[in-house]
Image 1 (cartoon, rainbow, N blue to C red):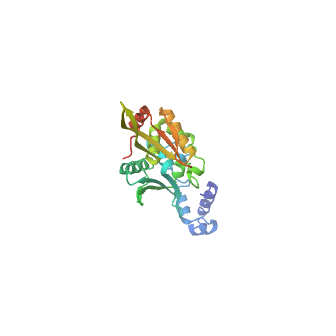
Image 2 (cartoon, helix red, strand yellow):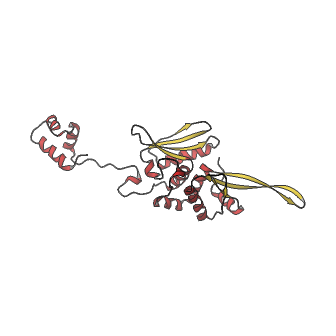
Image 3 (spheres, rainbow, N blue to C red):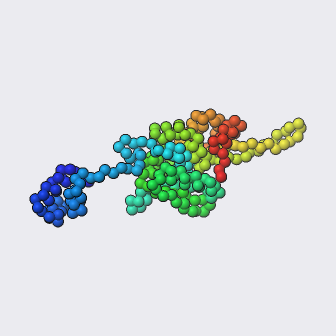
Length: 257
């Protein structure tokens, strides 16, 4: 980008009846640029298609879809730099067993970045829902080197405001990525007879303490009771088992499909 003084000087040389070729050789400015300055001195302003790159950054307009996609990204997503300056790839891993989840993930990506295409890359037992854009790190500033559980994961203020406005979409994204709804059972003695008793339960498992905290903080805000159950040395399993809380989760989330 040449400053205005440089552009005005080049045009003054052309005004001295010097050819574009001569001025280009003297200044090192291409003839194409010189020719364009003759018709328009000021460059055309470019409007960015990224709300976070505007002069006054703003949140994405598709807040509901973004909250869901944020949950998916924190659970089973990654952003990777592409070679030869092709931008970044956002990839969300989805199991083949849940075609509805794959469709919902594709729909959310396309809604958040409608100008970018979304494709599905098939792997063994899963697919990677993928979209390329130079602006994915702007929309997901949690992107960084290494695994998510090995670095701090903190939402920016504008992200937290979206989560606060659409908590169930955020929770749905987390459950659809690293969670599940299962049917547990236990044996009870009723009237002297041993009977099998079944009940539904939600689990969310992650090894990042920060992501777990985002999940449980949001559960608290929507009035869902939860408790941790240690699953292994590294993974933490958050359980929702109370009847009222499970019913609330069923109303807003439900099982994967």
